[in-house]
Amino acid sequence: QDIIDSAGIYSQNLAGKAFLYVYGEEFFEVSFPIDHFLHLTGVKTNLSAKDFYKNAKKAKLTNSQFYFDARHPYANARKKLPCLKRLPELTNDMVCILKDMQTVTIIYKLSVTNLGLTENTDANGNKINDFFLPMSLRVEDTSVEKSKDGEIVDFIFSKDASIAKYDTLLVEDKNKMIPDSIKHLISEKLYSTEHD
View 1 (cartoon, rainbow, N blue to C red):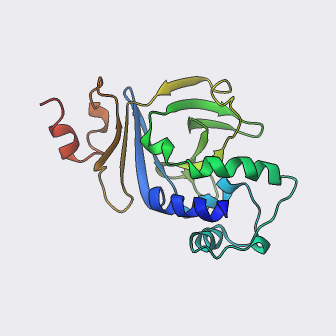
View 2 (cartoon, rainbow, N blue to C red):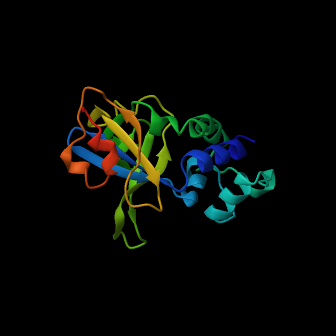
């Protein structure tokens, strides 16, 4: 049931959308593809990642359609699912951007609090676009200590993935101005009214 609930939250708040995180003069974009949902749940399945997500979203996922193993233990999934339900908080709250977050198996170049992000690459490792994708939901509280550097986000923008420019401001540090470095990515209305 937690997986089904999480799929509903993921589809309403994250799937099909893109998010722009801005801190200082730096920024990066994140999208939440439906085929990354499975990995975030911490369970194993014989279904394709897309079918797993579709079944969960339609509340048709059954216990026989997923399982646990040594790499995907039950206890881990139990810990990940409450975090997965709260994933939208990483797009609409002041969050910490971590660099080089280290896990047992990988170092994530970027992460948003406890969500490890990976570059969007094809099977040969070639970059498809500039988006980062959610790869790993860390449930330990040591993400910050296991990172090189942490900064609080200044702005988070969102848009429907099908449109060119970000048109919604979700998080804003009122003491900061939108940097020129991202103005080409956001709708003019978002910065034309700024500090008038």
